[in-house]
Length: 415
Image (tube, rainbow, N blue to C red; front, side):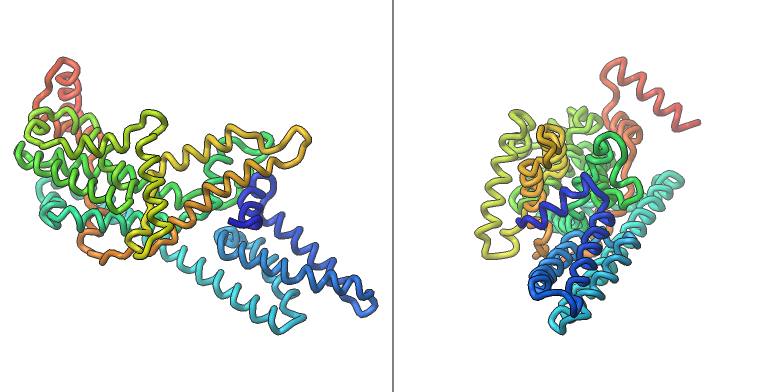
């Protein structure tokens, strides 16, 4: 973790990135005035010192925070600045060229990813619409009919997790809570800026996986089939834990703990739950997720000393990571009583975010299975009401409250 990373991450709490870039531009213009033939030797020495530092700042900025440069004002300033830097020296010209190419490549890849996400979401919406119009025709298959190997499913989940993680920019963590509490209550630094959209897409994926698990469990008509699906997902969750994929693990547990699933007592009676109990214990929220945090530390340690890319995988339970960063921001003031910036707070913030940056760079070592990935990303998932309806149809209501709910759901379905 560097000073530059900490500075670029936290500066946006006080100033727009393009305003910061304008200041850097202004500084560069001032220094170039000093390089005038009439300027003295001392001024020229200063220029020689400052140019590589500005280049270092811009290189780290474009590599680590490329999304800032989707703002046209940023791009204009960058072009002006790089033109000035490149005009004096062949070495700088080459470095500037490589930096600009790298930035364009990163922004192109990001646009392609966002287009792919739109397509995936559109396909999922179409399949859900088909399910509503022709319920029986639309459900031709379930996950077990596509792949009954929990290891393979856990590996494909890890593919999705790592891909979505890799597109989250570090600034999105800051933006996520700045919107809730704009600086000094006067303006948000992000009112006209890219919001935390990749972070939101990742949170939506967690919710989708939870609902997919619940849908797969509630769909089968026969009790023994439902029990088999539960046991299958327990095995998938256990393999996710072994891989270091804590986000999918928690999403699966959340899906199994949804009321429409947990109320299926006869189904659960047929399930060997010992393995599930162990996993629930690992992700137990008590003592501020002490067990999970211990397991995460172990996975992080394994990742640091890893010999293979498989051992490098650490996919944190993401909602908790966001919560930790949010509370760090809420718990400490941005400024000290003296009016100076509370740099210790921002150093801690950068430490947490830079750990995430290490995790998101890991290449997924498992082979991709397009069919399974397509199913996980686009298979129709039931709404909460549809899950309750399926649940009551599998195992009838047990009390008056459930009976009333079932009546209401059936009435709404007919009308």
